[in-house]
Length: 330
Image (cartoon, rainbow, N blue to C red; front, side):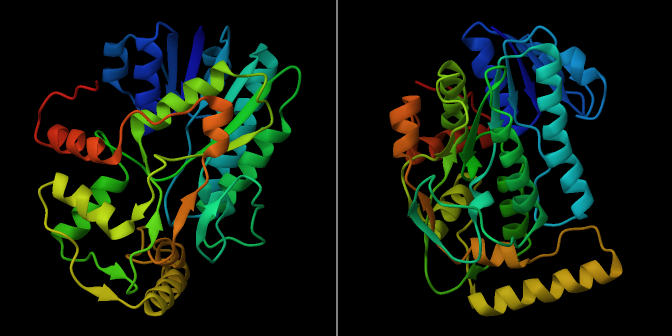
């Protein structure tokens, strides 16, 4: 197949490119920055954002588009999240329709259904909340609905919601945890240790390929993705820190205090136009103090999804990669 990966230079994007090349697809990537490692894989690279006319050139002749590009984060101007996540997704849909691409695999997030309470074993029947605690989940929810509404006989669309992607090459979760732990600014939020789902990056990439192969039959559907191994949040974080050679998290801040602090910091940062991310936000306080795990039965049934790398195996691979060893998957 001829395929395009938007955001191919990102964490999940690179894993997708690698998996696609390995199975013999002809792969293109569209990213805002230059990634020589993609060209070394044999990926044809386009340097542009989703509003650039180069998008049409990148899409042209493709059998499928994996739309993994997004603006993630807990803080920032709403307009920037909207432009990247909503307008960017609209541009990808339009490009697919103009160029006659028959398949679109959209990378969403479980945060699109996160309101203000925990989620335990929920499935895809859960609706969108009435309000959101941050611009990222709000704009991703809008983009997901846009993508699913575009499903038609001309363009088959499926949306995937991987939760807490981690593993070797992580440029999002791991650097934040490491920086905060080294600075002594990482504390447990709340007295509990809520169960959470996560997904090893290769498992998430595998699910995307499975979804593509099952289109158009699964057009218009959405699926939660995880390792299917809910575990206590702080055990997972301590395991990731241990892989990085760091001690476990020490100290606790009450959950209501963390939420109140997050609200206050958001107000101050907003008032003074501070663009750097606050050390705490309302969304982060809720994420760190409530359970988040999902029923992935639909992905197993419809996609044939079966996570190949367990959390224990993934932590070993992460430790090896951080120690400079060669990463090898069985």
